[in-house]
Image 1 (cartoon, rainbow, N blue to C red):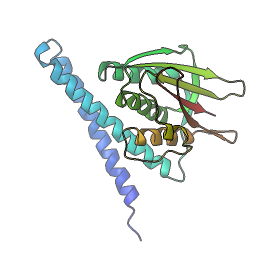
Image 2: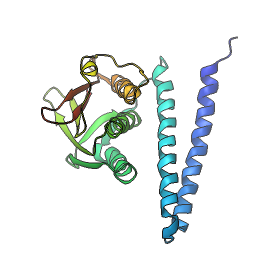
Image 3: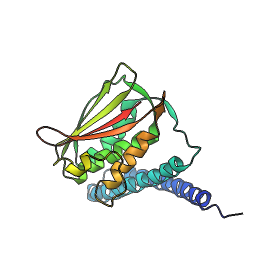
Image 4: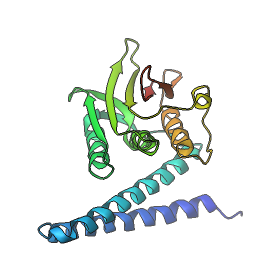
Length: 216
């Protein structure tokens, strides 16, 4: 019987995930103890930034393993979109210095896999940050046939011409090559009535780029 490396890797990653959650909990306890000690705040913030990024990368790896599993189907439950979006906005405003505004009704909900959407949003925001954006605007569009999209616009330098003509993103080793690949994989896992989720990127007429996360 061949050794099942995927099962071993998945089990080890879930153990790491449990340890990571314990570490984040201990970190919160430490931050509470030191909340009135201003001289330690910069150290706490630095540890928090790195631990949050590490935790997100771990979640990405676990999700990639799930997507690659032939039997994987996303858990498309109904969620309030702002409940998913607000923690990510808080992270990027507090830890990464982005200014983020949104035009999303607090009552808007949709059927999506929350973990996969978190990956798509996190990578969209991180891509914008890495290429030099300082501001993001997030909005939602709904369509009569039932599909909907999240529109993310930034004030950065925009996408390179080559990227704008790609239909399938690959892992390229560039600053945003992996991010676009993960976003596309997260969206393509969503299916409804024979349609599949997708990502659309474009440059704005004046400044910045636009990423659209499209749900079927």
